[in-house]
Length: 223
Length: 298
Image 1: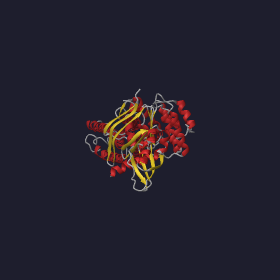
Image 2 (image 1 turned 60 degrees about the vertical axis):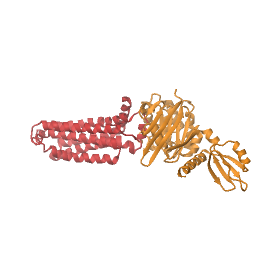
Image 3 (image 1 turned 90 degrees about the vertical axis):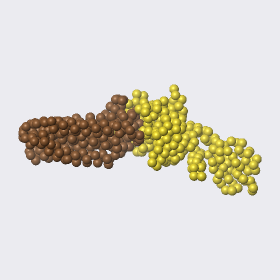
Image 4 (image 1 turned 90 degrees about the horizontal axis):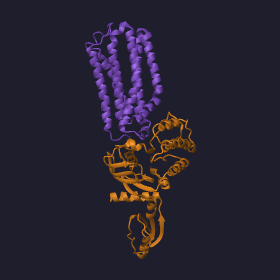
């Protein structure tokens, strides 16, 4: 693996995505502020805005760094560089995760911080962690689909599937015994059901990214 | 130093509606090969296989001593590639692209890049999206040349350029040849461009290489003989005839292995050779393609 080449591609994508990331980060901080100081109505509005911002940044990164290369016909330029398919795949996966995860961590840490600071919603702690990982999982689904298909249509479909999954998984998680019990309580609880849910989500993330890597390695036509 | 920069042996690639069949060719180091074919003939597919961007189904490809596509990263360190459908990043200036490539290619020649920018009348601080098509092609060519590649692969680089830009681009290619170790593969459907700069010519049609030789040999061995036939004299049987046109008593024979002896042979057989015309590369290409297609449909 030519790490120096992978690094160059990661820095290139950072250069082109930096403004979008800063804008979304500002949106994320704003939504945390609304959650913290907006009262009951602000809590729900801010939460909605926070989830939207996380989805938007994931989609922006995937569209800009993966689908955009083909749409804007810059893929031929990138692939003319001394890079193999494997290195290209690694670079694209890495840049999306490296740019999304810190952003995601900041917003998740902010959300959990707000929950810890407000004893009335302590019960939402486990649910919030599981849903935050679900958002990471949806982003990874988009990354995997965009990498393999390089298609705007399929990537948008993956985005829609991820968004629907937030509602479905949210509903399911909210009914899992061991998580639902204390959800509206005033104490922070972390039970085995929560650990299992998060582990399943991380296993699915690994499966999606590993699957994308596997499928990419079997591709015969790159342009 | 390897004497052959590109070696294709029995390369095939099949798509549902197009096949590249049994491609064999060699590109000697230091030569410029013009790769001529109509649209959809297989030029770009061949070049993509050469670059490792498309995997061949069968056959072997070696570029600068590296097997492709397995060793494409190492091979591409010494290749400058420009294709008609390649775009640079519109939101970034040319200077950013230069800096980006400078960090990747150890042989990047910044002073040459700046010199080329002046010659091409490009402003490095200008964003790519603000450039005309001709300027974008020149920018891509600058970025390929300043890497100081051993092999330059140009896939239809002059398509869509105005005459002035085309002459400038071709002129710079000729200048790049001052380095005798540099090899160029230049694909185009514009035979005039290819004729101007190439010393090797390869014709491709419907996924097959139909002829390959050095340019002088092509121009020497292809001729049109304009004959005058007296009554009762038939068209003489000559070697390498690919086409017989003209009217009954005034046939025009196109041959791909002309020899001055043919003139006396015709005279001996009772036909008068009114003229022996040289052919342009375009005429040679068209005659070559037509004769092959007729053979296939016969």
